[in-house]
Length: 107
Image (cartoon, rainbow, N blue to C red; front, side, top):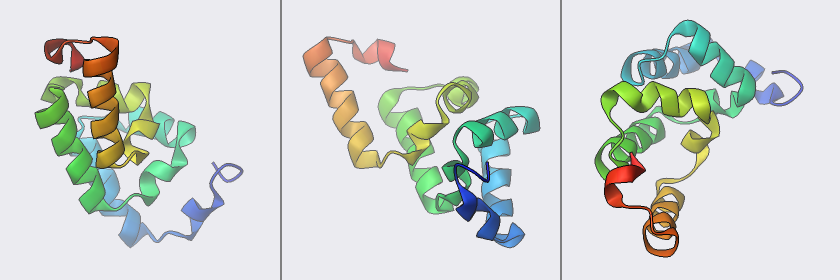
């Protein structure tokens, strides 16, 4: 983690704790799964809590990911949470219009 994202070590526990709690509780991640996600994408813990909330809402409401599957999204590709909502919307549009993925299959 230190090699890929040394900034993580400059963040205070007070800054990190709410994000860790949010990811564990609202994305239904176990500590082990969150640990793996942070090793794969340590920038995850540098994201603002407000941004994590917006991305969770987008995945649930716009993409159609179920509450039960949110953790799988983060486990499979933690970097998706580093995308802006605007970029997520553009990718959704591309998948629907250009690739032909159905709305029902996105989530």
